[in-house]
Image 1 (cartoon, rainbow, N blue to C red):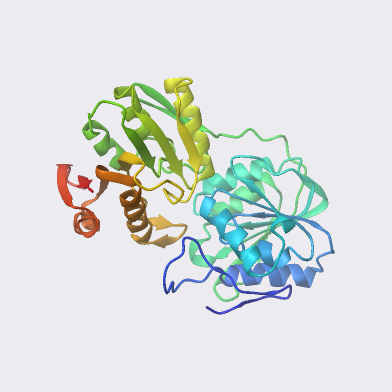
Image 2 (tube, rainbow, N blue to C red):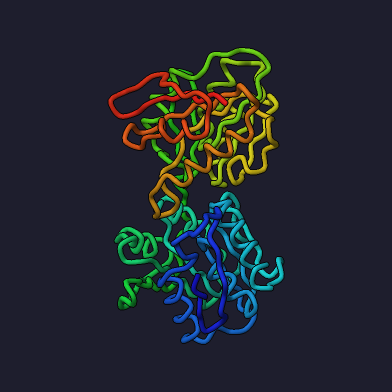
Length: 374
Protein backbone atom coordinates (compact mmCIF):
# COMPACT_ATOMS: atom_id res chain seq x y z
CA UNK A 1 0.00 0.00 0.00
CA UNK A 2 1.27 3.52 -0.75
CA UNK A 3 2.41 5.77 2.08
CA UNK A 4 0.26 8.73 3.08
CA UNK A 5 2.52 11.71 2.33
CA UNK A 6 1.63 14.96 4.08
CA UNK A 7 3.50 18.14 5.13
CA UNK A 8 3.39 16.79 8.69
CA UNK A 9 4.42 13.14 8.26
CA UNK A 10 4.77 10.15 5.99
CA UNK A 11 2.57 7.38 7.29
CA UNK A 12 1.98 3.70 6.69
CA UNK A 13 -1.73 3.24 7.32
CA UNK A 14 -4.17 0.32 7.35
CA UNK A 15 -7.94 0.05 7.36
CA UNK A 16 -10.11 -1.99 9.71
CA UNK A 17 -11.31 -4.66 9.56
CA UNK A 18 -8.28 -6.39 8.09
CA UNK A 19 -8.84 -7.76 4.60
CA UNK A 20 -6.30 -9.74 2.63
CA UNK A 21 -5.14 -7.75 -0.41
CA UNK A 22 -7.48 -4.90 0.49
CA UNK A 23 -7.54 -2.60 -2.58
CA UNK A 24 -8.82 0.37 -0.56
CA UNK A 25 -6.61 2.96 1.12
CA UNK A 26 -6.97 4.26 4.67
CA UNK A 27 -6.87 7.87 3.38
CA UNK A 28 -8.07 9.87 0.41
CA UNK A 29 -7.60 13.18 -1.38
CA UNK A 30 -9.85 14.99 1.10
CA UNK A 31 -7.48 14.05 3.94
CA UNK A 32 -4.53 15.33 1.89
CA UNK A 33 -6.32 18.58 1.03
CA UNK A 34 -7.24 19.22 4.66
CA UNK A 35 -3.69 18.71 5.93
CA UNK A 36 -2.19 20.81 3.13
CA UNK A 37 -4.59 23.63 4.03
CA UNK A 38 -3.62 23.36 7.69
CA UNK A 39 0.06 23.58 6.80
CA UNK A 40 -0.49 26.61 4.56
CA UNK A 41 -2.39 28.37 7.34
CA UNK A 42 0.52 27.83 9.74
CA UNK A 43 -0.61 25.38 12.40
CA UNK A 44 0.74 26.58 15.74
CA UNK A 45 2.67 23.93 17.66
CA UNK A 46 0.62 22.52 20.55
CA UNK A 47 -2.59 23.93 19.10
CA UNK A 48 -5.67 22.12 20.40
CA UNK A 49 -7.19 20.24 17.47
CA UNK A 50 -10.44 18.29 17.37
CA UNK A 51 -10.75 15.80 14.52
CA UNK A 52 -14.23 14.47 13.80
CA UNK A 53 -14.96 11.26 11.84
CA UNK A 54 -11.33 10.51 11.01
CA UNK A 55 -12.09 7.26 9.13
CA UNK A 56 -8.99 5.22 10.00
CA UNK A 57 -6.90 7.80 11.85
CA UNK A 58 -5.01 9.37 8.94
CA UNK A 59 -5.53 12.97 10.11
CA UNK A 60 -4.92 12.27 13.79
CA UNK A 61 -1.74 10.27 13.16
CA UNK A 62 -0.34 13.00 10.89
CA UNK A 63 -0.96 15.73 13.48
CA UNK A 64 -0.19 13.82 16.68
CA UNK A 65 3.53 14.82 16.87
CA UNK A 66 2.73 18.50 16.28
CA UNK A 67 -0.29 19.44 18.40
CA UNK A 68 -2.79 18.30 21.03
CA UNK A 69 -5.15 16.04 19.14
CA UNK A 70 -8.57 14.83 20.22
CA UNK A 71 -10.32 12.46 17.83
CA UNK A 72 -14.03 11.73 18.00
CA UNK A 73 -16.17 9.46 15.87
CA UNK A 74 -18.89 6.84 16.00
CA UNK A 75 -16.99 3.82 14.70
CA UNK A 76 -15.36 1.24 16.96
CA UNK A 77 -13.47 -0.01 13.91
CA UNK A 78 -12.29 3.55 13.25
CA UNK A 79 -11.06 3.83 16.84
CA UNK A 80 -9.32 0.45 16.52
CA UNK A 81 -7.66 1.58 13.27
CA UNK A 82 -6.43 4.74 15.00
CA UNK A 83 -4.83 2.67 17.78
CA UNK A 84 -3.19 0.30 15.29
CA UNK A 85 -1.98 3.10 13.02
CA UNK A 86 -0.42 5.01 15.91
CA UNK A 87 1.52 1.87 16.87
CA UNK A 88 2.34 1.09 13.23
CA UNK A 89 4.00 4.51 12.88
CA UNK A 90 5.82 4.45 16.24
CA UNK A 91 3.58 7.10 17.77
CA UNK A 92 2.64 6.91 21.47
CA UNK A 93 -0.79 5.44 22.13
CA UNK A 94 -1.65 8.47 24.30
CA UNK A 95 -0.63 11.04 21.68
CA UNK A 96 -4.28 11.16 20.53
CA UNK A 97 -7.24 11.29 22.92
CA UNK A 98 -10.22 9.37 21.52
CA UNK A 99 -13.77 10.33 22.52
CA UNK A 100 -16.66 8.18 21.24
CA UNK A 101 -19.45 10.07 19.50
CA UNK A 102 -21.79 9.07 22.32
CA UNK A 103 -19.86 11.54 24.54
CA UNK A 104 -18.87 15.19 24.09
CA UNK A 105 -15.25 16.18 23.45
CA UNK A 106 -14.22 18.86 25.92
CA UNK A 107 -12.56 22.00 24.47
CA UNK A 108 -11.69 24.69 24.01
CA UNK A 109 -10.33 23.83 20.54
CA UNK A 110 -8.29 26.07 18.22
CA UNK A 111 -9.08 23.97 15.15
CA UNK A 112 -11.94 21.62 14.34
CA UNK A 113 -11.31 19.34 11.34
CA UNK A 114 -14.36 17.45 10.11
CA UNK A 115 -14.64 14.61 7.64
CA UNK A 116 -18.27 14.94 6.59
CA UNK A 117 -20.00 11.67 7.58
CA UNK A 118 -22.48 9.73 5.50
CA UNK A 119 -25.22 10.41 8.05
CA UNK A 120 -25.89 14.16 8.21
CA UNK A 121 -27.74 13.73 11.50
CA UNK A 122 -24.40 12.74 13.04
CA UNK A 123 -22.80 15.89 11.60
CA UNK A 124 -25.63 18.00 12.98
CA UNK A 125 -25.29 16.53 16.47
CA UNK A 126 -21.52 17.03 16.37
CA UNK A 127 -21.89 20.68 15.33
CA UNK A 128 -24.45 21.25 18.09
CA UNK A 129 -21.99 19.85 20.65
CA UNK A 130 -19.30 22.30 19.48
CA UNK A 131 -21.27 25.13 21.07
CA UNK A 132 -19.13 26.53 23.87
CA UNK A 133 -16.15 24.35 22.93
CA UNK A 134 -14.38 26.74 20.50
CA UNK A 135 -11.45 28.94 21.54
CA UNK A 136 -11.38 32.62 20.48
CA UNK A 137 -10.33 32.75 16.83
CA UNK A 138 -11.02 29.05 16.31
CA UNK A 139 -11.30 27.71 12.78
CA UNK A 140 -13.68 25.02 11.60
CA UNK A 141 -12.90 23.19 8.35
CA UNK A 142 -14.90 20.32 6.87
CA UNK A 143 -13.69 18.14 4.02
CA UNK A 144 -15.02 15.47 1.74
CA UNK A 145 -14.87 13.98 -1.70
CA UNK A 146 -17.22 16.02 -3.86
CA UNK A 147 -19.41 13.02 -4.75
CA UNK A 148 -20.04 12.48 -1.02
CA UNK A 149 -20.42 16.16 -0.05
CA UNK A 150 -24.09 17.19 -0.09
CA UNK A 151 -25.18 20.82 -0.07
CA UNK A 152 -26.94 20.19 3.24
CA UNK A 153 -23.56 19.71 4.96
CA UNK A 154 -22.64 23.32 4.18
CA UNK A 155 -26.06 24.49 5.31
CA UNK A 156 -25.56 22.79 8.69
CA UNK A 157 -22.14 24.43 9.10
CA UNK A 158 -23.68 27.84 8.38
CA UNK A 159 -26.57 27.19 10.74
CA UNK A 160 -24.50 26.09 13.74
CA UNK A 161 -21.05 27.67 13.20
CA UNK A 162 -21.10 30.71 10.92
CA UNK A 163 -20.55 32.04 7.38
CA UNK A 164 -19.23 29.47 4.93
CA UNK A 165 -16.69 29.56 2.15
CA UNK A 166 -16.22 26.61 -0.19
CA UNK A 167 -12.77 25.94 -1.62
CA UNK A 168 -11.88 25.10 -5.18
CA UNK A 169 -11.90 21.42 -6.01
CA UNK A 170 -8.57 19.58 -5.78
CA UNK A 171 -8.36 15.92 -6.86
CA UNK A 172 -12.17 15.77 -6.65
CA UNK A 173 -12.09 16.90 -2.99
CA UNK A 174 -13.40 20.12 -1.46
CA UNK A 175 -13.07 22.02 1.79
CA UNK A 176 -15.84 23.93 3.56
CA UNK A 177 -14.42 26.71 5.75
CA UNK A 178 -16.77 28.06 8.43
CA UNK A 179 -16.04 31.24 10.39
CA UNK A 180 -17.42 30.87 13.93
CA UNK A 181 -19.91 33.52 14.99
CA UNK A 182 -21.97 33.79 18.18
CA UNK A 183 -25.03 31.59 17.99
CA UNK A 184 -27.88 30.97 20.45
CA UNK A 185 -27.52 27.80 22.49
CA UNK A 186 -28.81 25.13 20.08
CA UNK A 187 -31.39 22.52 21.05
CA UNK A 188 -30.60 19.11 19.66
CA UNK A 189 -33.36 17.21 17.83
CA UNK A 190 -31.67 13.98 18.90
CA UNK A 191 -32.29 11.37 20.08
CA UNK A 192 -35.45 10.61 18.13
CA UNK A 193 -38.10 8.14 19.27
CA UNK A 194 -40.65 5.89 17.64
CA UNK A 195 -43.14 3.30 18.88
CA UNK A 196 -43.74 -0.33 17.96
CA UNK A 197 -46.98 -2.21 18.49
CA UNK A 198 -45.55 -5.76 18.54
CA UNK A 199 -43.74 -5.90 20.83
CA UNK A 200 -45.05 -2.74 22.50
CA UNK A 201 -41.92 -0.61 22.75
CA UNK A 202 -40.84 2.99 22.50
CA UNK A 203 -37.34 3.06 21.03
CA UNK A 204 -34.74 5.78 21.50
CA UNK A 205 -32.41 6.42 18.56
CA UNK A 206 -29.30 8.58 18.81
CA UNK A 207 -28.17 10.58 15.81
CA UNK A 208 -26.12 7.97 13.91
CA UNK A 209 -28.46 4.99 14.37
CA UNK A 210 -29.47 3.32 11.10
CA UNK A 211 -33.12 4.03 10.22
CA UNK A 212 -33.48 6.55 13.03
CA UNK A 213 -37.04 7.67 12.24
CA UNK A 214 -38.68 4.27 12.20
CA UNK A 215 -38.10 0.52 12.16
CA UNK A 216 -36.14 -0.53 9.07
CA UNK A 217 -38.03 -2.84 6.74
CA UNK A 218 -35.58 -5.73 7.13
CA UNK A 219 -36.02 -5.82 10.89
CA UNK A 220 -39.78 -5.41 10.44
CA UNK A 221 -39.77 -8.53 8.27
CA UNK A 222 -37.60 -10.42 10.80
CA UNK A 223 -39.46 -9.66 14.06
CA UNK A 224 -42.51 -11.95 13.54
CA UNK A 225 -40.19 -14.88 12.79
CA UNK A 226 -37.72 -14.65 15.67
CA UNK A 227 -36.99 -18.14 17.04
CA UNK A 228 -39.28 -19.17 19.88
CA UNK A 229 -36.91 -21.58 21.63
CA UNK A 230 -37.23 -21.18 25.39
CA UNK A 231 -34.66 -21.93 28.07
CA UNK A 232 -31.34 -20.65 29.25
CA UNK A 233 -29.89 -19.96 25.81
CA UNK A 234 -26.91 -17.69 25.26
CA UNK A 235 -27.97 -15.31 22.51
CA UNK A 236 -26.21 -12.49 20.65
CA UNK A 237 -27.79 -9.67 18.67
CA UNK A 238 -24.92 -9.04 16.24
CA UNK A 239 -24.92 -5.53 14.75
CA UNK A 240 -27.67 -4.67 17.21
CA UNK A 241 -28.42 -1.07 16.18
CA UNK A 242 -30.93 0.26 18.70
CA UNK A 243 -31.25 -3.23 20.17
CA UNK A 244 -34.72 -4.06 18.91
CA UNK A 245 -34.06 -7.68 17.85
CA UNK A 246 -32.30 -8.60 21.09
CA UNK A 247 -34.90 -6.83 23.21
CA UNK A 248 -37.83 -8.46 21.38
CA UNK A 249 -36.22 -11.89 21.79
CA UNK A 250 -35.50 -11.24 25.47
CA UNK A 251 -39.10 -10.24 26.14
CA UNK A 252 -40.32 -13.58 24.76
CA UNK A 253 -37.57 -15.60 26.42
CA UNK A 254 -37.18 -14.53 30.06
CA UNK A 255 -34.39 -17.03 30.82
CA UNK A 256 -32.18 -16.18 27.84
CA UNK A 257 -28.80 -14.55 28.41
CA UNK A 258 -28.34 -11.72 25.91
CA UNK A 259 -25.29 -10.04 24.38
CA UNK A 260 -25.85 -7.00 22.15
CA UNK A 261 -22.91 -5.70 20.11
CA UNK A 262 -22.48 -3.02 17.46
CA UNK A 263 -19.54 -1.09 16.06
CA UNK A 264 -21.44 2.22 16.40
CA UNK A 265 -21.05 3.87 19.81
CA UNK A 266 -24.37 5.71 19.33
CA UNK A 267 -26.12 2.43 18.48
CA UNK A 268 -24.78 0.91 21.71
CA UNK A 269 -25.88 4.00 23.65
CA UNK A 270 -29.37 3.65 22.15
CA UNK A 271 -29.52 -0.09 22.84
CA UNK A 272 -28.55 0.40 26.50
CA UNK A 273 -31.27 3.01 27.01
CA UNK A 274 -33.85 0.87 25.19
CA UNK A 275 -32.96 -2.26 27.16
CA UNK A 276 -33.27 -0.39 30.45
CA UNK A 277 -36.69 1.01 29.42
CA UNK A 278 -38.01 -2.38 28.29
CA UNK A 279 -36.32 -4.82 30.67
CA UNK A 280 -35.12 -2.77 33.61
CA UNK A 281 -32.16 -4.21 35.48
CA UNK A 282 -32.26 -7.63 33.78
CA UNK A 283 -28.70 -8.80 33.23
CA UNK A 284 -27.27 -8.15 29.75
CA UNK A 285 -23.97 -7.46 28.01
CA UNK A 286 -24.14 -4.48 25.63
CA UNK A 287 -20.89 -3.35 24.07
CA UNK A 288 -19.25 -1.56 21.18
CA UNK A 289 -16.97 -3.94 19.37
CA UNK A 290 -15.66 -5.52 16.20
CA UNK A 291 -18.64 -7.82 15.91
CA UNK A 292 -18.04 -11.07 17.77
CA UNK A 293 -14.24 -10.90 17.42
CA UNK A 294 -13.88 -10.83 21.21
CA UNK A 295 -16.49 -13.53 21.85
CA UNK A 296 -15.12 -16.82 23.11
CA UNK A 297 -15.38 -19.79 20.76
CA UNK A 298 -18.33 -22.14 21.35
CA UNK A 299 -19.93 -19.70 23.80
CA UNK A 300 -23.25 -18.92 22.08
CA UNK A 301 -26.33 -20.97 21.25
CA UNK A 302 -28.01 -18.47 18.95
CA UNK A 303 -26.99 -15.41 16.94
CA UNK A 304 -29.51 -12.95 15.48
CA UNK A 305 -28.28 -10.62 12.74
CA UNK A 306 -29.53 -8.02 10.27
CA UNK A 307 -26.15 -7.50 8.57
CA UNK A 308 -25.02 -4.17 7.07
CA UNK A 309 -24.04 -3.93 3.42
CA UNK A 310 -21.77 -0.87 3.60
CA UNK A 311 -18.91 0.61 5.61
CA UNK A 312 -18.96 4.41 5.42
CA UNK A 313 -19.31 5.04 1.66
CA UNK A 314 -18.10 1.59 0.57
CA UNK A 315 -20.87 -0.87 -0.41
CA UNK A 316 -20.27 -4.61 -0.35
CA UNK A 317 -20.89 -7.83 1.53
CA UNK A 318 -17.45 -8.09 3.16
CA UNK A 319 -18.77 -6.98 6.57
CA UNK A 320 -21.67 -9.44 6.39
CA UNK A 321 -19.35 -12.30 5.39
CA UNK A 322 -17.07 -11.45 8.31
CA UNK A 323 -20.04 -11.42 10.71
CA UNK A 324 -21.10 -14.86 9.45
CA UNK A 325 -17.58 -16.18 10.07
CA UNK A 326 -17.52 -14.65 13.56
CA UNK A 327 -20.93 -16.15 14.36
CA UNK A 328 -19.82 -19.62 13.27
CA UNK A 329 -16.74 -19.42 15.49
CA UNK A 330 -18.74 -18.25 18.51
CA UNK A 331 -21.58 -20.78 18.19
CA UNK A 332 -21.59 -24.20 19.81
CA UNK A 333 -22.02 -27.24 17.58
CA UNK A 334 -25.72 -27.32 16.78
CA UNK A 335 -26.05 -23.57 17.44
CA UNK A 336 -27.88 -21.39 14.94
CA UNK A 337 -27.40 -18.11 13.12
CA UNK A 338 -30.65 -16.41 12.07
CA UNK A 339 -30.40 -13.54 9.59
CA UNK A 340 -32.55 -11.30 7.45
CA UNK A 341 -31.20 -10.09 4.13
CA UNK A 342 -32.20 -8.67 0.78
CA UNK A 343 -33.01 -11.48 -1.66
CA UNK A 344 -30.55 -10.22 -4.27
CA UNK A 345 -27.56 -10.46 -1.90
CA UNK A 346 -27.51 -14.25 -2.14
CA UNK A 347 -26.73 -14.90 1.52
CA UNK A 348 -28.14 -18.44 1.26
CA UNK A 349 -25.23 -19.57 -0.93
CA UNK A 350 -22.66 -17.77 1.22
CA UNK A 351 -23.96 -19.33 4.44
CA UNK A 352 -23.80 -22.82 2.88
CA UNK A 353 -20.02 -22.38 2.61
CA UNK A 354 -19.78 -22.01 6.40
CA UNK A 355 -22.67 -23.91 7.97
CA UNK A 356 -23.83 -27.53 8.00
CA UNK A 357 -27.42 -26.68 7.14
CA UNK A 358 -29.16 -23.57 5.80
CA UNK A 359 -32.89 -23.20 5.35
CA UNK A 360 -35.32 -20.42 4.55
CA UNK A 361 -37.63 -19.65 7.45
CA UNK A 362 -39.77 -17.02 5.73
CA UNK A 363 -39.72 -14.54 2.86
CA UNK A 364 -41.28 -11.31 1.64
CA UNK A 365 -41.00 -9.91 -1.89
CA UNK A 366 -37.78 -8.15 -0.83
CA UNK A 367 -36.31 -10.09 2.10
CA UNK A 368 -35.51 -13.64 3.18
CA UNK A 369 -35.10 -14.89 6.74
CA UNK A 370 -32.55 -17.69 6.91
CA UNK A 371 -31.51 -20.17 9.61
CA UNK A 372 -28.02 -21.60 9.47
CA UNK A 373 -27.02 -24.50 11.75
CA UNK A 374 -23.43 -25.20 12.79
